[in-house]
Image (cartoon, rainbow, N blue to C red; front, top):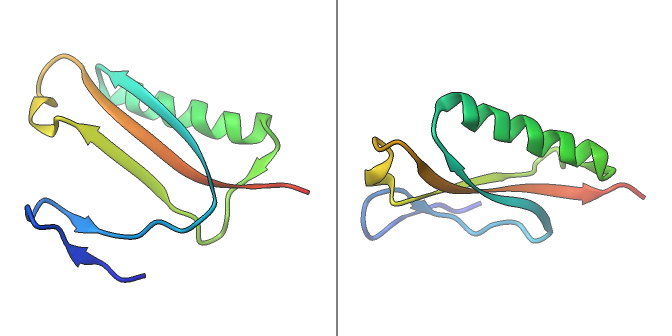
Length: 85
């Protein structure tokens, strides 16, 4: 997968693989909450009968990263999944 530096210099631009993603948008107030969200997301994978691809990707998008030092920050998490047939 090709990676291209982003124009702002704050990351890379990477095309995402085609497929289905389990997504959530959350407001977090601590590192503990961050890990709790990941635990819940993985529980949902199992509960919904999904599987994680061997070469799958996870995407974390932090909205307004400059505000992460405040009490609460918002992020979106997208986890690539496969349906189990």
